[in-house]
Image 1: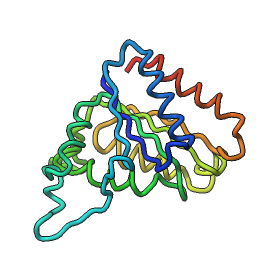
Image 2: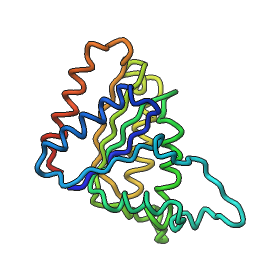
Image 3: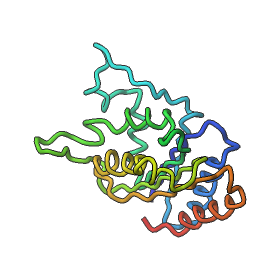
Image 4: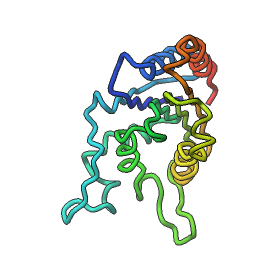
Length: 195
């Protein structure tokens, strides 16, 4: 199994970075994992800004040479792991810019004349690991789970990815004593991962 870890946090001293290290540690100890590639969007200097004009059209985004490396990473991966904080009820703009550009028509899905397009990333799976300052249940009760709905239904299901697992950790600034337990949970999940 090939795993692409997409890390989206500007600080390598963050809890998000600690989660990334636990994912890598668990994968290293898992014999079913062949290879892990890390894409650190901030360290990479990924440009999240969409630009469309006469020379750069949205319909050609799936063949944009600037994005070829990232397309190849997604095609290579059997499982994509996203690690990010929740800021203002949603992932960071850096990750949303990556999603806008990478999950494009012609690459992640194609129009087929039916009501719903055909997802082109079938057979892949996703794990989302997110942290937030607010309580874990805040997104459910106050935001109608907008983050999960966005990621699962509006994005992953649309492009053919049906297997999606979420780890959402809330109240992270208040529950520092639980960090070790949460990190261990993520480590054990990846150490025992089958697919």
